Length: 450
Image (cartoon, rainbow, N blue to C red; front, side, top):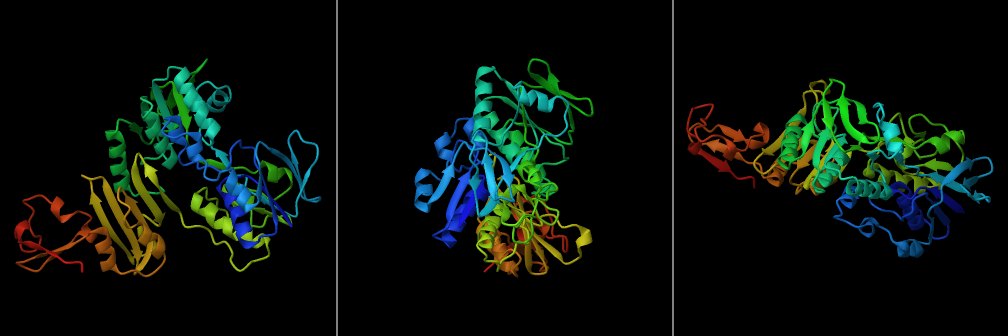
């Protein structure tokens, strides 16, 4: 059997790896318009600041493909899929490629909101850029060097936007992040942690403008600034747009494969066309798209098994999960991080906020079940949280892991539980009094977690 995969991104590459681990005999071909074997996109901003080289980003070198007997075809842009004859056509090549099973790992493209002049200025190389590939990073780096860039604006304060801002600042540019939402990372952080992150970013010399709706990119021959909907204007020499992604669906759509925002798949990652599957950023399942690495990894296992006829596991969606560095600080965000009152009264939150060390840890429980977490600045609990998601956990074990303690008043026995208050006992003012007996802070003794 011959399996053809279009796309050598994380979804496509790990689908190939999982296929080979399940079956030694099938023929596996990957076609990609990329110039490079599979590389990590997470460190692309560091390529701009020259903290890494291209070779540092490449995860799987040529030997890996040879060992796995996976045929990788670089610089091959697929222009057409013919489902009825089980063929794909490559740009500038006459002979089609025949397949038995086809996997669409088409990925996604950067979203460009409808700002006036944004698309034209990007396409005409006038100082507006998006970052999605190695070539994008090199183009941005060269523009900064050759165009005497002094000021930069990043539109979009998401995970990649903030890390991009950090590396642009490392290029010695005056750097401003413009964010549509009233706080940073609303999907990953609660309000308290978002404030802490903003303060930390600004302490590093990066300007942050929130609740800012960009209306227009200003400039003629090249970019000169941006204008917000409220009339404010900001001067800049370069604009970098990091405003989310759009699934790549054109190839599928032209082949009459069912699409909406993404390529529609069922629980086995099958598309509407027989023997054609889809995986990763390009898919839509139950009206949802993911665009996160954990989803790509999870889906790649299911699609590999599915096309081999092993259908004992179906896809149920992926719990939102992010672990990466933002401005050099560790951040893990998983599951439900900010439960609302409407979701019922049984929610319980353990929280540790240490503003002096820029450390914020929050565990969300429903009953005794672990439902979500934010770990910012300190990731010792990450492995525990990942392994215990959706399982019953021991509250005392969690307190010990987070180094949260209870303090008991020697006078009246009142207990001050750091996990419930969110304020560390040592951070309370020296003149703080026991709420019950008005005794001194010195009258409290730490209670052992053991």
